[in-house]
Length: 202
Image (cartoon, rainbow, N blue to C red; front, side):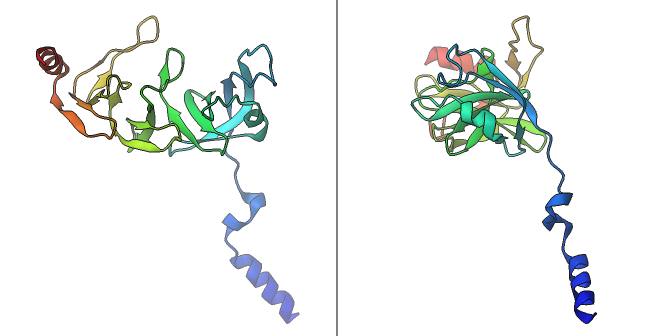
């Protein structure tokens, strides 16, 4: 009887987090992607209703079924739309959220791709390499792809209402250029108009 009482007491003191049956499953979002050719020779976009989960750190977890059909290109990356956002994934399961560009995941430019992270209730832009490692931390309110070794970035800017094609003009705030390491080539302290005038003079 003594042993039974001790066992009952022990069970009552086990934290609920260690009881799998009581864990609450996160809802799975729908996804869409172009599958690998062997899975779907026509290469048409495939959709799954219960595909994966978006994480607050800007990553995603994809269910085994859809993951097995992803088309990992020669550089080991696959792109997917999960819920309302786009992600790149690697075969080892590493993932990162990227902004949309021309109705799909942002393209790499000069070896880097933009990433979007929710930080303190706001979306911030940074840059990743092809390993999906952060090269430039997400510090900017908007950032453009790299071109000619530099990228146009801003702090305090905001996107306006989208036009008929779904594009939005970004305005306001302070603008500048950074290099591939995140170092300021032109300090982020100019209005966009001032920066364009300065660039024209250079």
